[in-house]
Image 1 (cartoon, helix red, strand yellow):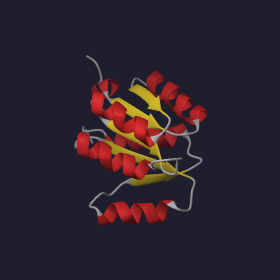
Image 2 (cartoon, rainbow, N blue to C red):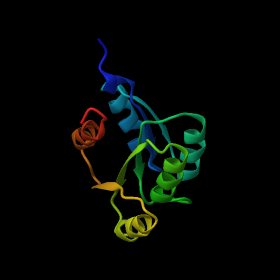
Image 3 (cartoon, one colour):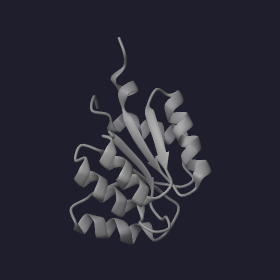
Length: 128
């Protein structure tokens, strides 16, 4: 019998390509179906074409930030769970702005160990 987590589709968004690519490799090795894009606009385009169960996104990126992208993706895929990652002090202001629009997102501080991300994804899974 297959573990339902192994079917979870994850979209990873980070303008630091090495981080995005590495995280996707780790997630795929752990049984997730993960893909990555490198900016917020690309993330929305990808989400419009495919249903994702989870979004992992950097917050501060050139162009559209990860919080605005997450909000748009949640509009497209209301069931999509969101995990944000940030190493920038502007994140608090952006989170407060999102909260004022009715969106509460969890943020992990960079640098974040992949084990921490995997633990959060496990906690966010529907079985929990």
